[in-house]
Length: 248
Ligand SMILES: [Fe+2]
Image (cartoon, rainbow, N blue to C red; front, side, top):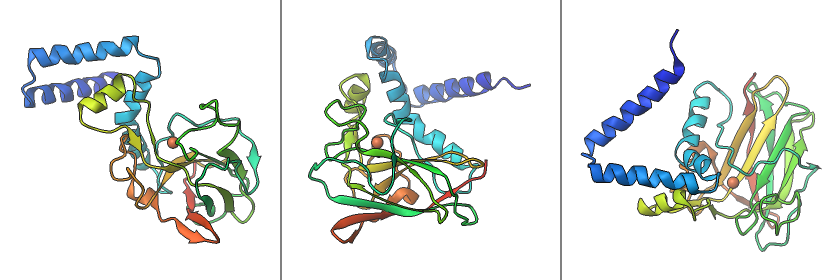
């Protein structure tokens, strides 16, 4: 039986060797690279998952989509919280200067049948790119909540338009981006996670048409199907997004 660790790890090794060969990497560069990796030993423990997610998380969600027919999934990111209040039609926000945002749409199976009782987690940043539960300045449970989907499959949630934010960039991962001439910013987005018995968990993000950094997301997570127009209606922006969940 094939040893999957050997198969995957050794293919990674061969891919790296091919790159080192193609670019004629010198001993000096090789030792500089190893020395750079040593910085992770002294860095805060989130730096290794951070740099892995920076380059590879979106690839794994693309792999996931090869086996799904429903709506497009996307990276979860580090700011999901399990224990959040059930919301009705409004997420708790502060008067942070950003515009009201209405999230609306339907949650159905692949055939369009509503999924009654599905749990929809919604979370996003405030107008300064900060998340409650991680930024001590923000009230607990602000900018996040859990909606229970009713018999018609519809949801309509009032919140505020989030802002772009940089990933943590004061450690080696930020230094690496800087040396590469790249920026550490993610475009503004709203996170969703939907769970329902009999269906695969659906984790995704929604981005906004024309949003800053949409074309150069530092984690390269934006996919065309996840970019939505924000329509104007009754003094608010409206993001309409329907979810089709895959059967388990
Ligand atoms: Fe996020």
